[in-house]
Image 1 (tube, chains in turn yellow, blue):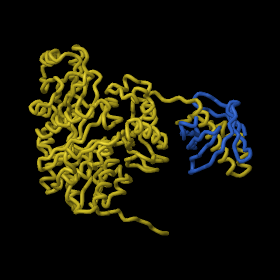
Image 2: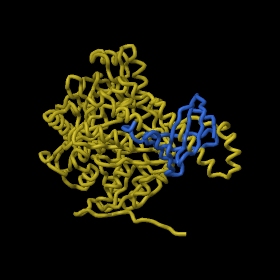
Image 3: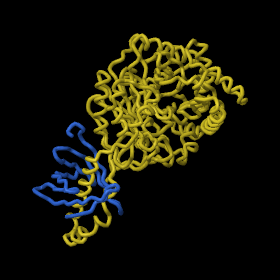
Length: 515
Length: 76
C-alpha cells in the first residue's frame, strides 16, 4: 500500500506578499478563485468548511482547512464568531469574504477589527451606508449622481403609500432597503395591486434580511443592467475599470454578463465611470466595489446601488482590463495603492461569462443538485472555466446551486460569442441538469447576437427556456443504450447472455433517455 | 438480438448485431451503422453516419437510461 500527497504550491511572486496567511470565509468556486490568487502571491491559504463541504474542492486546494459547523449556512458560513475564532487560531492575518454569505455584513468587518484581523473589503462605515439602499440613494443624490425617481422608506399608512406611488406614476418597483438578489422586489402595475404587494415585499424582506423596510422607485421599462467596477485604495485613489452588461437575468438574478456593453461608447463609459467614482467617494469607500446603473431605452443612466464586495461576474472585467481583481483587493487591504492610474487603464477585446448553475431552466430554474458523474471542462484560446467541482463531487442542497462560471474572451463580441458557443459544446457535466443547454441557445439567438438586451429578455423570448426536443439525438440515445447493453451482455457468460437476451430488455425497457 | 426499448412514451423495436467491428442497430426500421468505443466506465464515443457523439449510459435496476451529448454541432 502506498500513500501519495502533494505539497500545496506557495510559489512566491516577486516582491513581498501583502499577507503571510489569509482565511477564505466562503465556499464553492469563489473560495477556489481566492485560494488560487493567494497561492500565486505566495500567501498561505486557510479554508473553512461546513459538514456538507468536507469533500469540496476549496478544502482540497487550501493549505489548511477547518470545520466551522453544520451544513446550514446560518450555523457555519454565516457564523461570524466561529469564522473569526478560526482565523485567530490558525494565525491568519486577514479574512477574504468572497461574495454572498458575510461579504456585505459590516458585523464581520467590525469583528475582524476587534480581533486585530484585516477584513479584505470596505470599512464597516461604508458597508453600512451603502448596504442600506435608502441611505445609499440619498448619498448618490447628494453626490450629484442621477437616480430613478423614487421615495424614501415607505410608511405603514397604505393611503400615504398609494399617494406616493401615484406621484411617481405606475408602474413602480417595490424594493427592500436592506436587500439584494431580487428579494423583496415587486413590480406594481396598478394601484389596486399595491397593498397586497407591499405586504408581500415587507414579509419577504423581513425573512431574508431581518428588516421589512421597503421603498418605491419608478419602474424603467426595458431597462439594461449596466454596472461599473471600481477599486479604491486607502490613499484616496479611485479607479473605474469600465462597465459590465448584466441584462440577461431571471427573477433579478444574473445569468450572463459581458464587458463591454454594446450600448456604451467611450464618452459614455467615461461619464458613468466618473459617476461611479463620485458615488463611492461619497461613502468613503475602500477596496473593490460595483456601482450598478439602470439604463433606460432613451439612454439615460440611473444609479441603482453599490455592491460592497467582489461580484460573481468580476472575471469579465479581469479579461478586458488584464487586472486581477482579487490580487488588487489583497494589495489594497494591506495598505497598497491602485494597480494602475486611470489614464493607464486600457480595455481590450470583449468577454462574456455564463453562469453554470445546477438548475433546470425548463422548470423555472428549479435547483437540481446531485452528483457530478463526469466532467470535462472546455479549453482552447480565450476560454476560462472557474469552478469548484470535480468528477464524483456531490453538489450540496444547502447552498447556491451555481457550480461554475464559463468565461470566453475574444478580439470583439462576435469572436467572444463564437468561442463561448464552442466552449459550451465542449463542456460536459454528466449526472446533473444544468443551465448549459440554455446558454447554448442564448448564444445562437438572433436578439442576443444583435445585442438587443434588456432585463426582460427571457420573458420576451420564452423559447429559450423550453427544453430542446431533437428527435435525432433521442434516436442516438436509444442506439447508445442498445450498444451499451449489448456490450454488457457480451461480457457475461454465453449462458447468461442467452438468458438475459431473451428477457432483460423486455423486462427493464430502455426508458427515459435524457440529454 | 431483438429488444423492445421504451423511449419516453414510445416503445421502439430495436435490433442490434456486430458486423465487421461495428454495430448495426435498427431502431423501428431505421438502420444505423455505429462505431462505438468505450472511453470511460460508462461513457462511449459513438460515430454514426459520420457524426460524432458522446454518450453516457446509466444502468439502474429499472429502467436503463442513456444520456447523449452532441459532440460537434457543425458536423450535422
